[in-house]
Length: 281
Length: 358
Ligand SMILES: Nc1ncnc2c1ncn2[C@@H]1O[C@H](COP(=O)(O)OP(=O)(O)OP(=O)(O)O)[C@@H](O)[C@H]1O
Ligand SMILES: [Mg+2]
Image 1 (cartoon, rainbow over the protein chains, first blue to last red):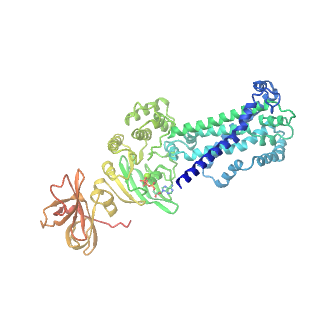
Image 2: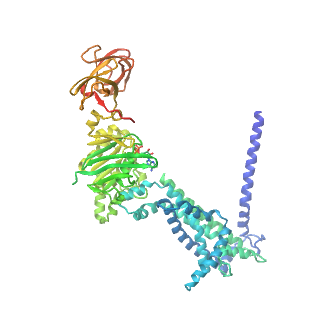
Image 3: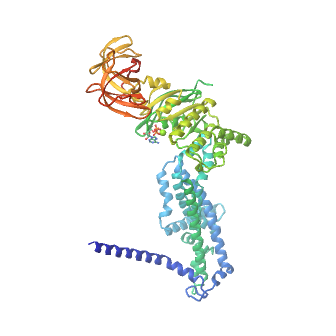
């Protein structure tokens, strides 16, 4: 009996190890292959042609890539800046102000996180085409493609910033803000001198998250630029490459770099949060 | 200066269905050390928060320095609160914490620096100004909280169990320091505690609270010697309760029959003949004497004897239904369990009390 049980335990143990192993292979093998192929000397992305840094060298000289990279950075920076301000303000309002319909407002703010991104993208497209453009054009203005993309990215980033900031705000000892009031600070001074500084780590990680999501976004960007504007961010550029008969190896290099950038941003966000928590304890 | 720093008139506060503060009236004199004493959950913190302005009462009026302040926002009240958990700003240094209130008043830099220095000196923390709160011990944090609240020279300081988190020795030390500070600065202190010894030791006057109500207000000696209700007699110090009936009266003196025993009682308000009455008698006000000495002494059997260093405690059975606790200083002087002893006391120590239905 005991031996049978031990045998069963061992078997289950080995199966679990195997399962974990397969999961990791399944998850990371494609990424490994991608990185490996970004160092390929071949003229085709999907063919191995020996080791070389050609693909990376070509990144810097290809004007299309440089412009896509620039667009991505501009979009991500502006969208992040605005989404961080708005998301933080929203978190403060939901958590600290006495407002009506708190429940419904909350639900609407969480919506962009849970609904399929494609739905959101199509919605934005319709909104821009049918509502915003006609509205803006009545006062003689237009919405340029980058502005549309930035606006789109802001709409989904706000929710993420809000969620991160709000979690921290909930943990924040309310008596700190009361102590500031008690010492004569006005509510606005309390926010500026006490609440915001204590929220800083959460705000920074929220911003980094928003930046990563913006860099990475495809659907919203794609639909916000339909109409053949030619405005391309890195994901759009990669998608366009993929449509060509012979895919150039820069695709692998761009994707690898984006991967590294995303990983670094996320690690940074985690680090900022970890450090602030350990200090608080 | 107004005669009263803080006045509460019939203040009530409900949270949902439960009434947490029920028609509390208090008048705290300027420069007084006044304590709110009561068990956990009796509404002490809520009362302080109403005075500080963080809760608004459902009914009643609050006056600070003679001016109506029931609905004044907290930042405009001339009172500062030392929080139960200190609530130091974790991102600011000790100096910046203490300077906070002065900066809100927009004082010139030089003046702020000078007053912060003085305040830190006052609480004996000079030299630790550059530290962050988490780099301080509990006692040091407590003193930063005190300095931060004192530096703006409010006319009233509200303290919510400020010594609750400190160990016994440090607590004793800080009690003396707080008392010294209060005397030197002549600021009104409204001090919340659930430690009766602390309240008795430090206060000019105190109010005993129970379940949202104030049961008795008075100087420590009066509260201790003349508790008005059974709850106060039991919560402050310790009491034996004896229930009996008045069998004879003569002016302020009455004779009360308790089971088979009789005793003389003196009371401020005359007792009625045949009235039922509860008498409170503190264990330390009973002396042991020879058994069967007559002369109003009682005789009983020592059932239990506990030596706890500074005193010895005896449980003495006087009749099948009646036992009393006696405590006398020092060791037992040869008295043993099972021995017959006599009990005697000053009739003034035997207090008739109101029954308070808790
Ligand atoms: N915001 C609130 N909502 C609901 N109930 C509350 C709230 N604040 C306090 N109470 C309740 O009111 C009662 C009194 O609370 P309070 O904090 O004033 O007690 P306390 O005398 O300060 O107790 P302690 O000595 O434990 O600090 C408690 O029963 C508590 O649960
Ligand atoms: Mg309390």
